[in-house]
Length: 579
Image: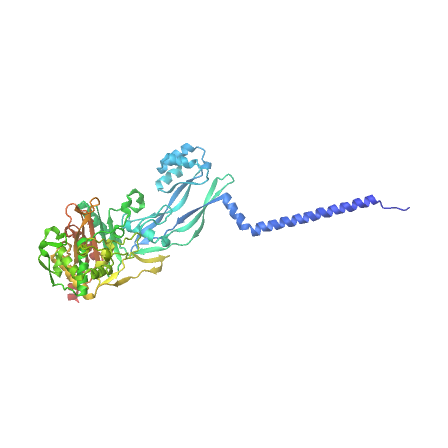
């Protein structure tokens, strides 16, 4: 029996095979595509997808912690950090909005309306109060409010409170330096960046927080300030400002040989832990940012220039016109109506004669006088390591009037910062070198020295011989002149008094009631360890520098010398005899 193949059946079988092969091929192609896509996602786009996932289910808050410390010259801490809690909310998790707002406002001492506005935010994370007080945090933690959380942050802390506040400055909420040393050394002091990761669920609710990565360790700054000398200066200055009902005051203590500043005191003061509670004018470091007409403490500059140029010697005499000197249409007199006739160059300084200073300046001439004023560092910034340094005012020779030479010789028609005056008199004290005043002693990291700040000589102003002559003249001011109240038993003191009239802002002329009383000097005179400037602004009972400022100099110097173990003349003699 012969069997024949059905053509229709064979055709159907072949079609089925083709369909199976097509489906198999499609599945292979699809699998290959899926594998390729999976490889692309897992290998090529892995990091991007992880970041996208973290962004969707986590929020990162960047917080600066661990700002570098600031120390005095003996490593006593002046600025450090403490850990505190900051309060945040997830508005989407707060159901009872009004009651929660009232509790937060009461516990954190905030405005209810402001808190309520934040609770209405569409965001999942809102700061309520950064760096809260401990008692505030304890109250909230006990309540356990829904949608309220806490993050640990670093807060700047000044353990000595007002001490050296205008020099240290302060920081903002994110620990950024806003004033003083904190601002000047911001790049070195700025804290460590910490990323706080806050994980959320699919509805955006914050589930937990944990620390993230930390970057870059900050540096510590060691200052030339001495906290003991700073305290002495602030205490004595504050007492005298209060005693004389003065507007303000300042005191600067510097080592003349190095330019290191041991104390920079100003009053009124503020507490940098709560700086916003004080008027902004108290934040200023007026020893650097403000310039004043120096008055008679400027007279040593013109006399030193005359000695250096060899146009006069200490015993040369000048006629002081019996108290009235006519220059063109102007009449210039002496302070307190004094009438001096013939005075030696030394006595011009000892008796603080305005007319005598004019006569010396005339011998110098405008060009030489101007040159020495510049050499002593006036009319330009000295480069002290604090922000906001003023240049003072020294007009160019082309702008001088017929009275400029005379006026500047006794400290009028020129303005100088207190730091400029200290540096200038420091040059007389140290043998003739203008040193750059500075506050930074070293930079450290993890206890290891990173950078040292050695003394920096700007240039030589005077010869050693002229320096010795000027020292002898300034010693006479304290021994038998206007500066007798600056004398310290057992030590030779060299210095100069000053009483400067202030400009009346309404009349633009010299006030007859507003003065700055000042004294600047150095001690021990023949081996100076300290140069000290004291300025009292608008004292009420008396305005003479010898009465108001000189006693403050004496008190600061006496206590500082004792603290530094600098022997008196009597102690040195006793030691030599024992030897």
